[in-house]
Image (cartoon, rainbow, N blue to C red):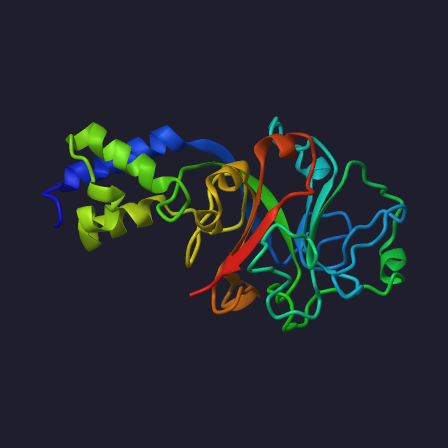
Length: 286
């Protein structure tokens, strides 16, 4: 049965959750009209690569395709959680309509790969990279990547708060409801307690759509950490990168399935060590 919660209570609950969960994060803003170079932060395109490293191969031994790269040297972010310099890259299998995601083992980097270059060799040329005969997404749509056209991206500092479909939200929201109204939500069942309209108000006010680094995730289905044991879910405590479906002037730039979103999760301490061996990769759509 729905509670007799008021509109004022809902506003207070939203603001209190924002206060309790606020953290610095970074939106990634598309700049599709600016042609990215080899070293830019970008979605799709030709990846930077250090010739001293082995290029990432998928489970069939084929070279992977760049999904996105983030140049922390150029971004110059003063954030202790993130590298001060270097290049972080996300690769996916180039012949898979699941875009390299493993539904059963989402942190097994067989058909996706997260790679970090501590230093960037700016003497590398695009011709040298193309000579590696790697699959690239530049401007022609490809069934095996969600990136429809390459796009430069810029970092924009922002403040993020926990969204209603993220792991852990129910416990925090129920605690805030108890703090503000004195009510205990039966079985932590927010939907039954709040009712359709009030739940939707909270969801819309707190959701974290868009491309981002750090902060909180959004989903079209459910947080994959909900299906993990408690210890594993707790380990993946940090949103490393989120790539949402997006369009510019009516043209798709990124499209996950029929308008979904992808998330990469890491452990916060591992991120500080620049250790990207254990990362969960998940995407879902409506």
